[in-house]
Length: 131
Image (cartoon, rainbow, N blue to C red):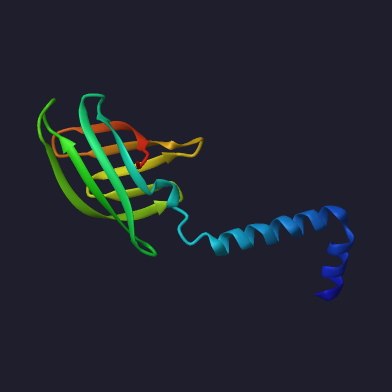
């Protein structure tokens, strides 16, 4: 094993590979919340019509909750419910009947896909910066 390791270290390409591997391991160890890009407040419109507001909050190390507000009629009052959320992968979480996906190319854009009882809806949301 030590001979193999010393051969790897003697090769420049292997040194680069080893350094990248060590860097990725150290980043993985520090990244306790890989879904952190989805945390925060978001707003947009279901199907470009009905306002929707979503706030994703970490309540414990691996537990999220979503404060979800939506309109059922244009200009109508907002309904509001809080749901627990499940992390699906690095940029996607699921809650109730909704999946949220952060755009990896633009962390300020979020796609919401809702499979509701009557219709499936899509919303493009933007991050809301806190004052």
